[in-house]
Image (tube, rainbow over all chains, first blue to last red):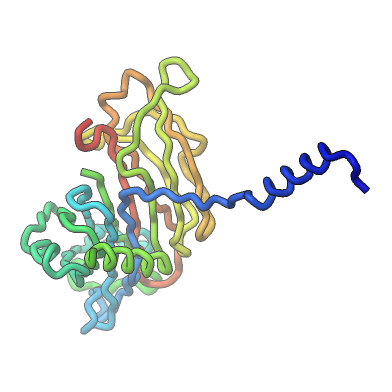
Length: 167
Length: 129
């Protein structure tokens, strides 16, 4: 039994201190650009000498999504491939075609001009992300073997590069 | 307000898919504990379950590489793993260094497809700097 009043006061203080303890939850909100692989593309093989992501030819268009939380702060640059990253040995020249366009937008007002204002240089298409929100971009890729020769049997992989650059 | 909610909704939805995220957008170069070196801190989050490796590089305004030091130049990040890292550059490069980029590195995949490579570039000397 505690007889000393001083001890009682000390225990009381410690007890109240324990009940008064807060558990903090901290978080920081920062401007950011997030690149999301929405749909990896698939090559269709409509004839012996063509590989294409066109849906009508059995392919799937690669779709990438950009989410930005700060307007006028980022460029989206999407580059379609000009070579295979892995493939069987090919001796013939391959002709590559590629293009990128806006597939969907989350802000019909602020992002309506993205497609008309895009800049294309070589295989790269650049968009000025002037509004916050999400934008989906789809790329069409086609590879044609020179001289209409057949692609050798095997697996073919190509890389679409999606870049988000701070302005 | 409505636009902000829509934006947050899409970002929350995005968190469930295959995303690559690096912050901050506009890093600050600070003096480091090493004389003659400046440091900037970054955070990298891998929400791509098809990617395990990210390569970091520093570039000038013309996209020429700038020498830098970090704990790794290629980071291995498991799905949903987050890492903080510092990039050190020479004091003499402080006005040349413009972009710090992280690029996803893909492994060979036997399925016939197009792989999406993602790169996010932060910028020194952002607006007003």
